[in-house]
Length: 120
Length: 98
Length: 107
Image (cartoon, rainbow over all chains, first blue to last red; front, side):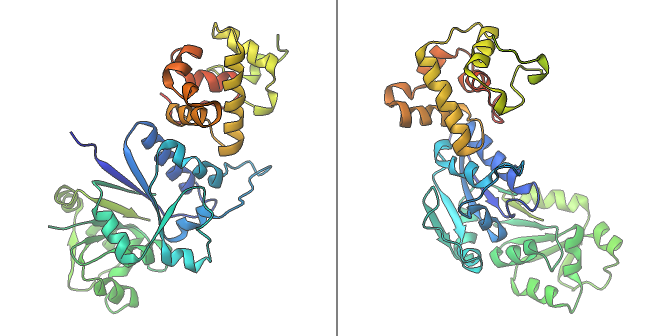
């Protein structure tokens, strides 16, 4: 039987709450259990992709570094809300993985391509 | 067949609200719950934006009553928890916005 | 032997503070797991610590295998190889000896 395809939609800024950390944990745990999972950074979630996040001495987990391990978890497809990336002047060329920028219509098409959606 | 069921549990001023109506398309359904019910207020900009998406609109009755949202737009269907469960059964692809 | 007090470890034997770790502590934890550390073990232990610095997390099995393949060569990037060094649950036991927190994604 085909495995269900799961899309995790990461929508929150990395350090404003614990939601981003939870979303990354869910993504990694889902992939660790050999599920087919891809991720979409939408809205303020794109801020998780900021370069040079420095958590040293702050006592917080470094979301940027944790996300850098996505390819090791075989999460190969990383989609990004193009409008939000533009809004924050985010450079997606230098992320630790390849990203694909999506318009709102593209994002809707993406949602439809998955069996399960998880918004976090 | 409805494509995506969006559960919108956030104020009209929130990023979650913006993101939700940006992505939702005709053929989807949006359920307003919690703070999301204020978007049902008839005549408000949020309500107009919501209707412009041309999605099926629902709101959770108990949450709307609690918030005092009695003047809701006519095409927003008020449902109870059972109705919400039915929707999730009918539309397996669900996305929460909060 | 390490001179750390029992309080330095959690109930499952994981070191509470990353900075308390030393090779001596590793030997101590390994002994508690009935493991004798060979150079092959040390190679993976140091790699686990490097992983933690790079990704701010302890790896699950899948990324650990891949990380070993990338850094130690394909022949060591295999679960069977890691299982031979750290029988049972290599990511969990390896992390424990390397002084890392218990991996989140391990049963």
